[in-house]
Image 1: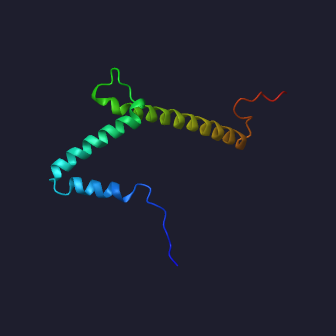
Image 2 (image 1 turned 180 degrees about the vertical axis):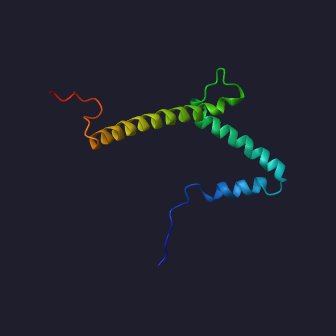
Image 3 (image 1 turned 90 degrees about the vertical axis):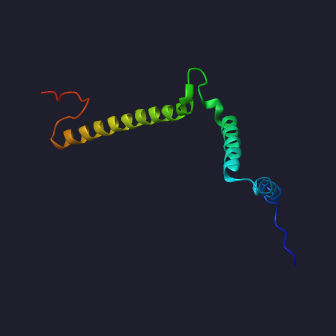
Length: 106
């Protein structure tokens, strides 16, 4: 009984070719080749998220800054809602009407 496996998703030829191209090169050349490949691949995939105009050398920081700002706003919103709920619970414990309640008619 023989068992056949599906072909590898990347393929053996890809890894063999990569090894043959780089096995005799010094580390510095392999590193430069990888950096060039990675920079181009990164730019092709994520370049649309960067602000090319007026970005300068920190253009890669733009997505992180936007995420940090959104995270900060979401955290502040959560904290506000949490504190309002805590104020209501504390007011109920002391017998006061709580936040945004009408006074008790006399």
